[in-house]
Length: 211
Ligand code: TMP
Image (cartoon, rainbow, N blue to C red; front, top):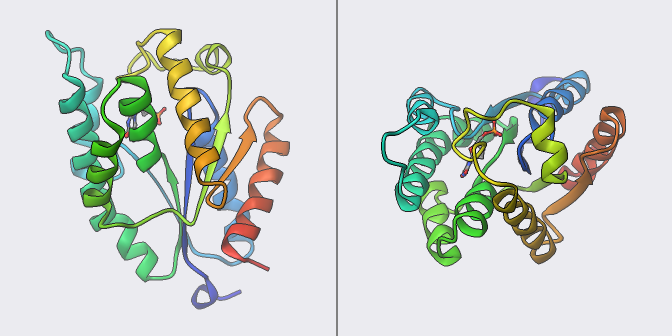
């Protein structure tokens, strides 16, 4: 299929630490490229030059911890730049954008995890994205003990948090998925990578109406 036949669309990958989103993003992109789609794989935070600076601030050990609101605003600043510089141009070029974390991460981590007001986060998400929503969100659900044991997330702003925090984040993601069943597909992230990939590809075909 020629690039001009690519259908475009925004797929977001969400989940807790060590849920396997990044590996899955690469797998999905490869499968779609094999079928002739043009794909842009990107991530939040850190999908732009500004985003990488913000990511550095978020990962740095601060002498006094970031306030939850300051943390949220850094993620939203990253998102505003990312949407305008990378995502919207890619969608306009009819690419399929596979984005490792997006607006739901702010709701799950800063909202359910840190306790910030969900409506405030929804408003800021709306401003940062200009109202852009994912066509499909794949939620990789993994118990925190499993996810945290898989990788070294100690550098992440939330990787240093307690199991309780990560349980709240997981519960938040699942609640968001229940509230929008038309957009979310929940995949058991403890399954083998091949099975996770097959389920994800099926969801992508249905979500983006690919043949
Ligand atoms: P990861 O995607 O490599 O796991 O790391 C990103 C970290 O940033 C992870 O701990 C989740 C966190 N995060 C938020 O807390 N809020 C957000 O809005 C986003 C995009 C990420």
